[in-house]
Image 1 (tube, protein in one colour):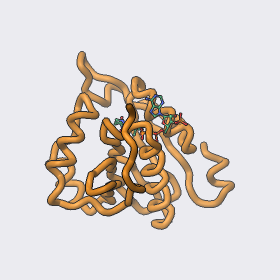
Image 2: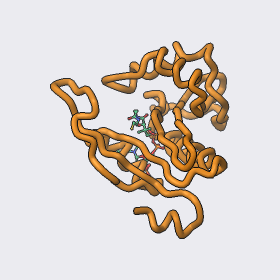
Image 3: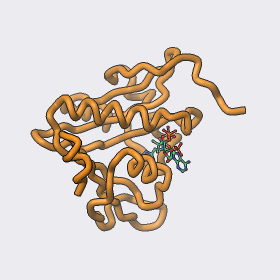
Image 4: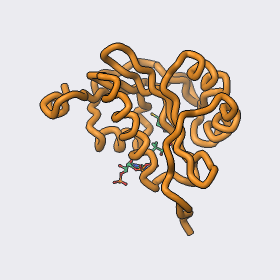
Length: 163
Ligand SMILES: CC(C)(COP(=O)(O)OP(=O)(O)OC[C@H]1O[C@@H](n2cnc3c(N)ncnc32)[C@H](O)[C@@H]1OP(=O)(O)O)[C@@H](O)C(=O)NCCC(=O)NCCS
C-alpha cells in the first residue's frame, strides 16, 4: 500500500542542526550523494536551502544558489518513501517562486541523462535542455555526462521564449 501524507507539507528553511539527517536521506536516493559537509557548506555560503516538512518529518529538500540575474538549482530531492506524491513538483515550484522574488531571470540545473524521472519533472516545469557537460558526474563505471537545463523567469513572454 502506498504511504499517505498525514498533513500538507510545509516549506521552511533548512537548519544547520539537521544536515546529518538530510545526508542520511540523501544516501538512500542517490548513488553519489552529497555529504553532511556539502549541506553545511551550502548553509554557510548563504545558499537558499529549504525543506518540506510533514508531521515533523523531512520529506523533501533542496538547495538553490542565487546570483545577480541567475540561479542554479544544486539539489532537489524527495525521500524515497514519499516520491511520486507531487512533492518534487511542489518544491521545484517553490524554488521558482523564491528565484522570481529575487529578480532572477534564468534558473539552471544539471541532471544525469539516466535520470528520466527528474528530466520529465523539469521538462513539465518549463525547463529545456540547454547544453551537455561532458563527463560531469562520477558514475558506477567511469563518468556520466550532465544535461544542463534552463528555464527563463520574468514576464510571460520570457517564459514562453525559453531559449
Ligand atoms: C526526481 C524527483 C525529485 C521527483 O520528485 P517526486 O516527488 O517523486 O515527483 P512528483 O510526484 O512531483 O512527479 C512530478 C513529475 O516527475 C516525473 N516523475 C517523477 N517520478 C517519476 C518516475 N519514477 N518515472 C517517470 N517520471 C517520474 C513525472 O513527470 C511526474 O509527473 P506526473 O506525476 O504527472 O507523471 C524524485 O524522484 C527524487 O528525489 N529523486 C532522487 C533524487 C534526484 O534524482 N533528484 C534530481 C537530481 S537532478
